Length: 106
Image (cartoon, rainbow, N blue to C red; front, side, top):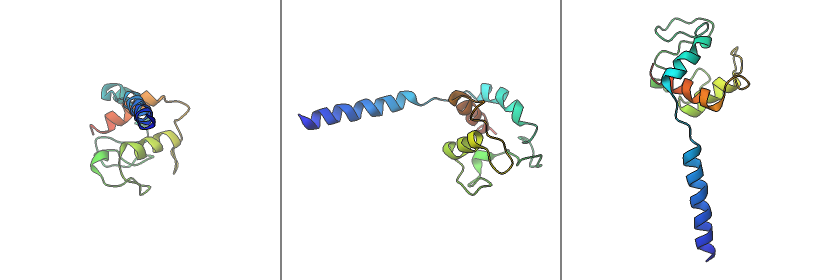
């Protein structure tokens, strides 16, 4: 009986986690990116105030040495660093997912 209860609880937690994941809307992310375009290029490797994001998700590492994945890119967007301001107070989790979806299209 105890194992059955633990199994039900584990299943409920895993199911909730699946539904909590927000998929990003690349079109909305492109619109949101407008505020980033003053510092980041997307169509060339030219560095503006910040690094070019062209082919970002085709790279192995970010400038900070972390691997390029949704978690590390999202962390930089939200916390900022190395001259980039944090956007955690300005962007919702859905906005972050949308931006990441757009960055994956570059």
